[in-house]
Length: 297
Ligand code: MG
Image (cartoon, rainbow, N blue to C red):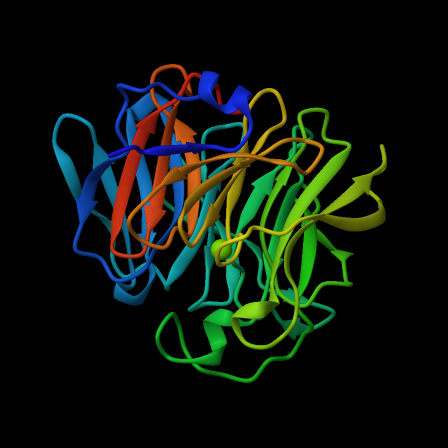
């Protein structure tokens, strides 16, 4: 079987015919939020309905990292190597300090509770950008069913002042997000389609030198399922989740090729020795594949 489907010839140089898409852990209910910690040679990811964060180490496999996890979803790390987490259960974004204590980055806006922070990215200036759709409070499956107090928006937090701003307010259900290599563009997935006829596409926003988001437009709509989470490689290609695997989209918005995964994919991250390895969270399992590409730091 082939693990790949090239749409454009260049995609054949991004993958290797002898590098399989391989399952490395399974038995979960809905995995999300993969993040690689190179210094500890491990992958963390959320098993959201089971209220836990898992850790996978190449030599020893998978174990529980944190339980309960407050139904955590997306993760990243900041420039000091600290874990940044979106928590559905406590409706907040947190940072895990090096001593293990938890610092709340954001849990409200204009005096109202956040919905259920979903995914998060840290810019090179240290600002923390996260999406806040309502998925984690709509049912008791991935958090606690409760009242929505705010529209679904993207927020920016200055971790020094804890100042929080609504950066993007024109989306239905903002979800995965990532910056372009020069950080002048912010890509954000809108997964409104999961609950209605609303959009299911990635939008791209211009970000000025003062971190103001000035304009947004349609970027790409995956042809299978929804783009939930994604990361970029060093050339600015977007590697996004989809129902049939991982799609590679050029900076111009063109589908270059697909990695075929046998379960619906939620999110991905780059990791491994040279950030050349893709980790894929997909429904009940985690998969990995080595690429001839490097993930953006
Ligand atoms: Mg997500």
